[in-house]
Amino acid sequence: MLKLYPPIEARRTGRLKVSDIHEIYWEESGNPDGLPVIGLHGGPGGGSSPEMRRFFDPEVYRIILMDQRGCGRSTPHSELEGNDTWALVSDIEAVREHLGIEKWVVFGGSWGSTLSLSYAVTHTERVIGLILRGIFLITEAEIQWFYQDGASRLFPDAYDRYIAPIPEDERGDLLSAFHKRLTGKDRRARIEAAKAWACWEGETISIQGPSSRPARFEEDDFADAFARIECHYFVNKGFFPEDGWLLKQAKEKLKGIPGIIVHGRYDVVTPLATAWALTKVWPDVQLNIVSDAGHSSLDSGIVDQLIRATRTFAKHYG
Image (cartoon, rainbow, N blue to C red):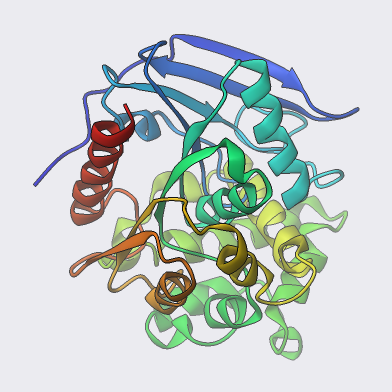
């Protein structure tokens, strides 16, 4: 089974002003003359991590990462104004132009898959191909499954901790209840809600369950940006014109674009059915189902398949 490449440091870093208030962080590592790839982190609001560099052979790939608006090292932290899907798509283009890259591979998991697909259907001519994990399209069904009723039946212990900050009379619409607190002026209530929201995802991303929750999901700054930005996007339905819009666009725009999807069979956060639906409208994609994995990009089977995918792209396009 393949493992992550050894840790590497960024070779170049920078900041790019993309609006009157937003400035985003970007970095470059690997081979400066290699196959360009942009890695798009999850959340939205999760920020990039050094581990993302390690899915790519640094001798072959020119690895670009960026922190999306409001999170990671981008500023202002946890800012919702001017923060939507199409602003982020524009930011990706701004980074590409800033670095003088003509076309690149687009790599993303979870929300990163949503953003990757949004970018690909908007700037198809700039995409060599897509490597995606944990497909998520921000449909009503997906949001209801994870944030209201569905995943709750598999992780009832974690779910009780998730809903604890919300009074019983508001639990019929948890998205609205969390949004009210995450955008309210009561700092204590905001952080309590943010940690509950973030830990719910942290406790369900792996088939190991709550015991494998990453520590950062309990950190105030991480949880605040992660929960606020996610909830902001989900309340606004991903800023898409209609439910299911991205799937329709994929059917129209992705023909001829090669793709590899890696998805855990037991992914509770973004169930496999969404990836399966995407394969039915995208003829040039290969779906690799990992039989013993959940949602986490660091589950061993997911790592193995993502490394194989990056090697496949390097062989054909590097």
